[in-house]
Amino acid sequence: MNRRMRPWLLLLFAVIAVSCAPKSEKASQTATTESAAPKVETHMLKKWMIGLSNRRPGLGATKVNTLGMGALGVTTSGEATSWYEMVDVDSSGKPDKVGFMWDGANKIMYAYTKDPVTLSDGTVADKGLLVTQFGANNTKGKPEGSGWYAYATERDSTAAGVAGKLHGCTFDAAGNVLQCGDGTFDRKGNDFNISVTPQ
Image 1 (cartoon, rainbow, N blue to C red):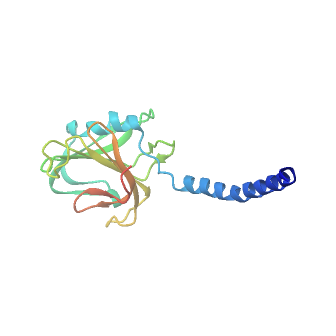
Image 2: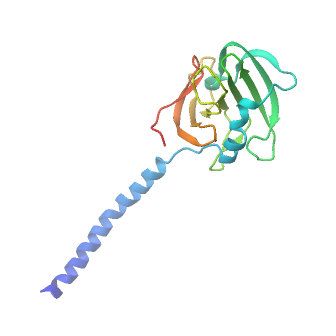
Image 3: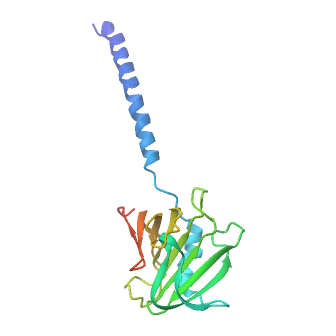
């Protein structure tokens, strides 16, 4: 009896295997589609971003209250100090033009560039990158040295800054990533609001 049933069992297993194959392929495709967007390289975060609040105004620094543009445009409530430097922020061997702005009243440092910055998957962010780091005794009540960065996945040149699509991460004072995802930049509070759960 068992010997006569064995071919039928083999046939049944084969049918099950074939019927499951498309589901597995679909699941694999879904996992790929839902994979996280690329991040800023770790060495860039740990060796450059976490030291922003310790930078000092360079030559040609001016008194302004704006930095960046579009969906990544920052406006401070009071007068701030701004300057530009050529910095190889992503260790690509090519200096990038970076604008810095120190908001002394709120103890917050901002940095912005439109130059291409290499991301973790080898692609580049070339539609705007904004970095914020909180200094000691900042008015946001954030830990000293912590901050966030956001880059535009679609360029936004509107004055209201409402057309751009952004992705970014928050980080602690040691440069460890805390949370990443798509989000929006609150131009009133100058804060990046991530719309996903912590990673």
